[in-house]
Amino acid sequence: MRSERPKLRGLGRVVLFGLVMALAACTGEGGFGNQSESQTSDPPRPAHLLVLPEDGQADISPDTAILVALTYGELDDVAVEDSAGTPVDGAMASTEAGAATSLWQPTEPLLYGESYTITAQATGEDGEQVTSTSAFDTATPTVQVFPSIGPLDGTTVGVGMPIRVFFDQPVTDRAAAERNLIVTTSAEVVGGWNWFSDTEVHWRPQVYWPANTEVRLDANMYGVNLGNGAWGQLDRSIAFTIGASHVSVADAATHTMQVYADGGLVQTYPVSMGSPENPTRSGAHVVIDKERAMVMDSTTYGLALDAGGYQTAVEYATRISNNGEFVHAAPWSVAQQGNSNVSHGCINLEPGRAAWFFDFSQIGDVVEVVNGGPSLGPVDGDIYDWAIPWETWLQGSALN
Image (tube, rainbow, N blue to C red; front, side, top):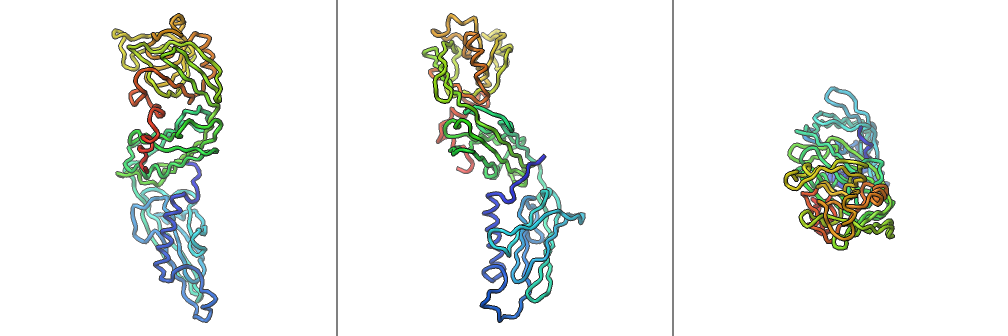
């Protein structure tokens, strides 16, 4: 189901103003409305109607504003019909540019690949009714693009969780897509978009989210030309909450993990991390899943059993990347925890401590690994956002 769309999008206000000014220029009168009091001696004038889109235009976005400009007189009616002659439900609303220029808005969106006829009627100062008709065709997409969004609507996540939008078809005009992805927050947050590919774009703050922030994303994609014949399929809106601030720092050199809640240190645990042959990746990891019990299988990320791989049953597994890194219980390495690194890249904890961390963690929490191996990157899964320096991140915006 499509979410309710704003009556006039932010970009639409700019475009609308430009269209109104164009209509004003077409009237040759320098403005709209009835004659001024200083002109009351002039004879009554006929109504002058102009309508946009203009007659004969094609490949129009179905989200395009329908504008009616009137000089001299009163607007009587505006009607819109599809190619079958079926009326389209809608209503008029005056624009900010002046009462004599009106915006017609459909109750439901216009359709792709359809022909529409606008009929506007007005009565001039001379008492005569005039009619203006315009027929236009909306665009016919080669493909319609659907946006999937994370986090899910209504969820609570940790301070490290970015907003992620996944398009099911490549987006050629990234700027058009980005202009219609609107992030709203309850607290002031500096952030920006970064494109990971033609089908994936993330928004993250400059620093971790403030705890307890309410966040909303309006993905206003319907009627947006995304390039190369692709158009947005629908609008979507999601809202989520940033929970308590949970940031842990796992140090491969000191073999400890310090756990902070809302800025205060709550636990310091001895750990064993990735061995020199299989180091834990450095950088800020994001909790993306939790499994009470699971079988860890190195073959799922490319390490064969006969090449030093493993298949091991573990408990309290908190996933921190998609490259096989977890914080989990490891009773077999308790003797090494706090003094040496022997894992295949995971952060090993004594079972009771792993259980505590499992219960403490929420999706989106941060685990910062310091003094580990190479930094997180594209080969390590889908959330390595915090490994990208802020200035580099901003360069990934199509609107930079």
